[in-house]
Amino acid sequence: MIERLLPDDVSCAATREETVPDGTLFPEEEALMARSVAKRRNDFATARACARRAMAGLGLPPVAVLHGHRGKPLWPEGIVGSLTHCHGYRAAALAREQDVLSLGIDAEPHAPLPEGVRELVTLPAERERIGPQAEEGSGALHWDRVLFSAKESVFKTWYPVTGVELDFVEADLTMHQESDPGGGGNPGAACGTFTARLLLTDPALPTTLRGHWRIEDGVIATAVLVRPNWREDGGA
Image 1 (tube, one colour):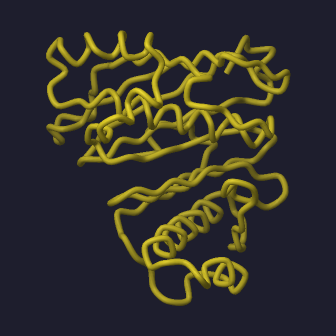
Image 2 (image 1 turned 90 degrees about the vertical axis):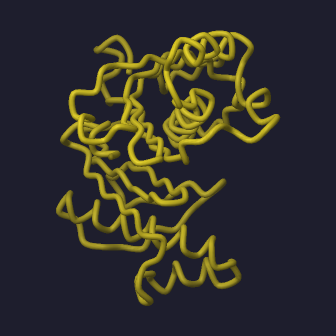
């Protein structure tokens, strides 16, 4: 599903499997997970398995993917990328930095946000915009969770370049739904785009980021990508 949200020069890999065989992790990765509970280890391992498949798509040998501050993946030199995992879906997206400045992906279960979370992660203007959409016959589309996932993708794009952590209320997102010509065989499928207006600035990235979202088989996927020449192109 992630591959439908990103251009062809991004190598994507995904799985619906919750576990991977023993021996999937490199020794350095095993050391990171030595004291982790089973769920955390499975999330880590399945995402790394996807990462190595994505590396192969770029013609790269498999290597360990360690992490830095706040879990930021540490990629091989010259590579940018993003990982995500949720129940029933794990994915990786990688590209060469000569082609892509930064990218972020996220996956979430297609269900409403837990009670009280919506108010913490959205702005009043966002709640006003998504409220009417939910009331106008969008069916079971849970806009609050789509918005949350989109913000996660924005933050994963922003942090590796700027080193600045965004708060949920420092990005104002507008969501758009589109017709889905490829969703005929999947009655729950939906897709669209979003625009994120950043409420703080950094010269390394545009103040407006654009992305795509998609829902299939109970999972929301979102993605954002910024090209190295974004200034010449007038934005992300």
